[in-house]
Length: 169
Image (tube, rainbow, N blue to C red; front, side, top):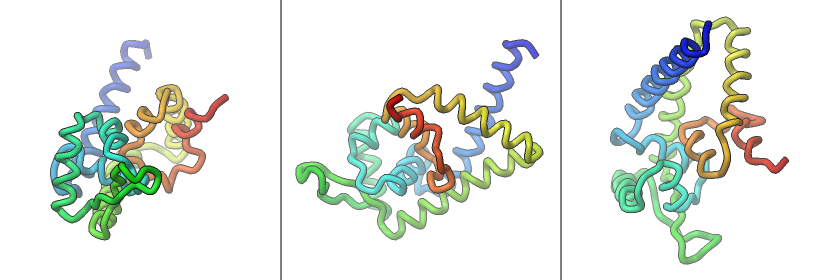
């Protein structure tokens, strides 16, 4: 297979997987758009600041504040005073937010698992190793790590290639 075809096929696969993943996770969120990713990030990083959430979701500050306002009004997120900086606001999931978080991660996993059933166990392992290699090459800073892992199930990813990419050599 020549490079142009590889690039085209990988691009089509990435888009198909992304569309399926977003459809599934957004169906579990209170609204379309970045809400599912915000809930997933806050489930993994309780106490995340609005600025960190903004950078991870690639939203404007006002857009992030409005999203947090809606998630708060829906009873999924609460604002607390940051332990690290009393002037800052730390975002946490409520009990209902944690239920939404679990549903989002389940939808994500189901979406991906359904597509990977087409591959043998050996092929899935090869794809996983290749994906780890590509992912670790994409990460250059913490913001990039949050962006890439905004819908990840971090509990299932021991020896995370994204975290590994951030470690000093």
